[in-house]
Image (cartoon, rainbow, N blue to C red):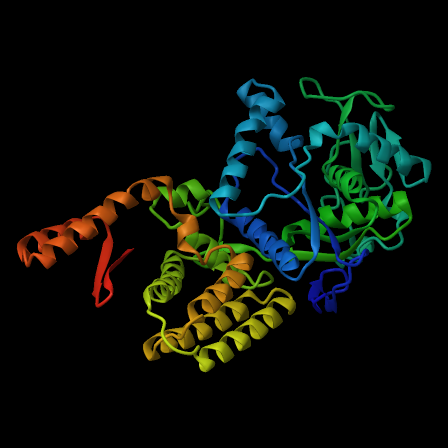
Amino acid sequence: MANLSFFNTLGRHLEPFAPIVAGEVKLYTCGPTVYSHVHIGNLRTFLFEDLLRRTLEHFGYRVLHVMNLTDVDDKTIRGALEHGVSLAAYTAPYIESFFADLDALHVRRAEIYPRATAHVPEMIALVEQLIERGHAYESDGSVWFRIGSDDDYGRLSGFDLAEARRGDRVASDEYEKEDVRDFVLWKAAKAGEPSWDSPWGPGRPGWHIECSAMSMKYLGERLDIHCGGVDNIFPHHENEIAQSESATGVPFVRTWMHSEHLVVDGEKMSKSLGNQFTLADLSARGCSLRAVRYLMLSVHYRQKLNFTFPALDAASAALRRIDDFRFRLAHAPEAGAGDAALANASAAFVERFDACLMDDLNAAGALGALFDWVREGNSAIDRGLGVGDRERALASLARAEAVFGVLDAASWSTGEEASDEAAIVALVEEREQARRRRDWAAADRLRAELDALAVVVEDTPQGPRWKRR
């Protein structure tokens, strides 16, 4: 296996990656709370996790990926009550929208997407285990985690328990508890809210216990990698560690990885500023979703990503360089022996590309290696390709595409584009026949029609070739 290194939030350092079982990776990522459509800040995290998974598979690991769907919490309950519908009816369209966004951005699906409402028995069992071990207690139908029982609390986030005061983010619930720092595991039922039976009376799970119970059901007590956004570090992931390790007595996660925030035009996203975009918002503006994926992957996951529309235009321009190279490569004639310089450049590219990915997912470095290689490839086409050069170059492109999922324009073509391709081919052929008849007026008219379809035609000694603009 490759010598991968990742920045582990637990300890704040870069360290070699070593899974619990050689060649296998148990990956858990925090999914959306399905009370609204996800915004591009959420999508930045999901795209980072997609890059991580693709990279692991690129280096030969077998990945079992679990991502939860939080469909019961204060926000989903509030929304269901305001709309007068059941929790399932309220969350269903947002779950559907979430998967549509993943598909639109070519994010590979996790193997399992457990919903919190379908795993309440597992959560109750975990809470019972914590009570038995003295780490939790019941009060007025609610159950609390006793933070004072965990001597290591705060080691992920650096949070100092001694400085915790009422109102801090440790917990701000209205239920009675022994210590203001304790956080809720099970909430006693309120009138009108959905609830489940439990040993402590009707109620519902707290947010933090959901992820611990679902991750351990599908991946076991010890995980290789747990991901989320930096806003999950405290209190959510800190509390996950506390309750999971207190229940099992074994280390919960080996490697914690977190993506930084996305900002828009240098400012934090907010509805009041009108800069909290969903993917549907960007589509309505005519933005290329392919460019959205490229932009979000081009910035290192531990750096803030400043989303701007000029940056999106630059992403489109970068992709056009790849598309133009692929187009030239497809139509360049091959003759004679292979180009040694191109073969050497391809080998150097693969080595540098992999080295960047192994260094904490250095996507910017990997893309830099790709564009240096594209420049060499264009020079090789200018010199003239030898037999086999095209196939070898396409193999290198495919290697990069498997990781980034954005470099092949054909895979992003819409059904409408595919259906009109036959018509374009017919127009190109009709124009070529007009040129052979020296009917320049007809040829010009047909070129204008193609131009209106955003199709560029190049006349070469080998015949016409076309591409979408």
